Amino acid sequence: MADDKRAQSEFNMAVSYLNRLNSLFYVCDEAAMSLNAHQWFHAQLAIFRELSTEMKPEELNSKKDEIREINNLINSSNKNSARFGTYEISSDLYEKLHEFELYLRSILDGAGLQKKMKEDPGNALS
Image 1 (cartoon, rainbow, N blue to C red):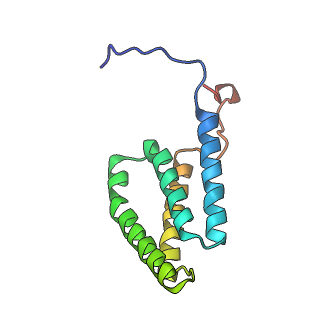
Image 2: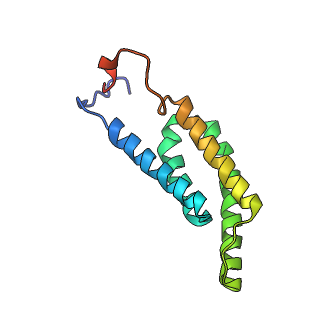
Image 3: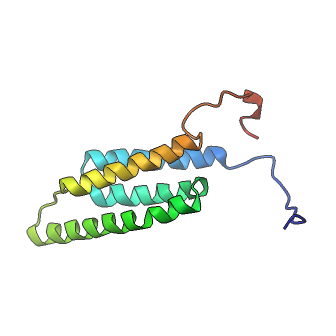
């Protein structure tokens, strides 16, 4: 593996990556404010995938049960919505989505993707 020298680009995907994250967090905010749990959750899952490279393996694994639990709550909510013709989000589901998003934002912050670097700005795009 040490001999695996691949050509390196002078450019990277950092700006595109941050734009994708920004767009996904915007979707999360809009979905949360409109109480659209399904869209909120799936936007969070997209963020989770984007941030997975910033997580340790144990962090990734520790969230599997939480994701499964939220998914089950969403499915139950969707079934009730179809049965009764109204859409309501339970306080339990809302709280779990809220906490999961706070976790994702903490990963974003911990990876230094949320704040300006205090280093030499000449290294910003390298």
